[in-house]
Length: 283
Figure 1 (cartoon, rainbow, N blue to C red):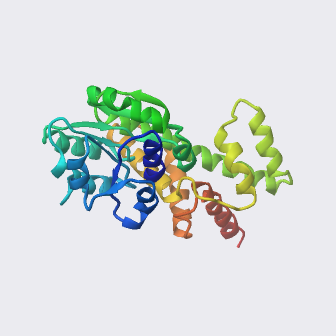
Figure 2: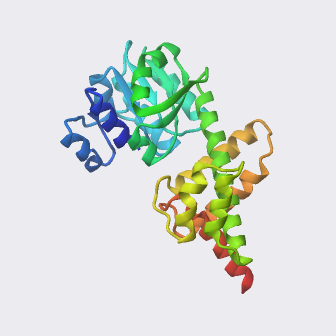
């Protein structure tokens, strides 16, 4: 996700310095003219605004607040924009550490996967320092098609988790429909077409349906990340005593899919967990 976002900034004429835990992942950007620094702290000290895109709360916190983390390179006048999907508590911790240096903090998790990142069509769900939001708005507009400012730090994280919770549950329901249609002798491709014509049409169904019917799951959004987001959404719901039984049931299926070795496949591979459950109930 971070690479196509950085690439779009470079195409727009921005001066980019990059770092990754796996240095080879920076190579395509370096070949386009990006500079490389040896730690998040050095990136932060050499840039006016630092964007962070990490896979989970633990790594987002480590890169911001750990040894040689970005916070060590921050100072008054600089900005830190975390576009990772994390829980609100982690976001607040990162924000506190960044602002303690005199720098500004904006959380800005993105809605959208690999293709929208490449096409500059992400949706930014931002919260935190409003003046930093206004300052980076032109950069967000290069990388995305829309942006929301949601107030205090934690609100961006919460919004992203709500959206991904709905997405994870929708995908499981869709997978159940495809398998049921096949079981009763319908053509699942026709099911995809019928759904696309009605009120429940969603781009996700039209996009993922045909490959799911063929049992192909090219990774746009890894299944392990969908399961992580459901886990974080369940914790968020627990913190306010909100029941989310459908999301809880969906989460169990993604966990089954992970145990089947599908963690790095697209999250639509959750259909394989349902197939496995069908087979085990037949024996």
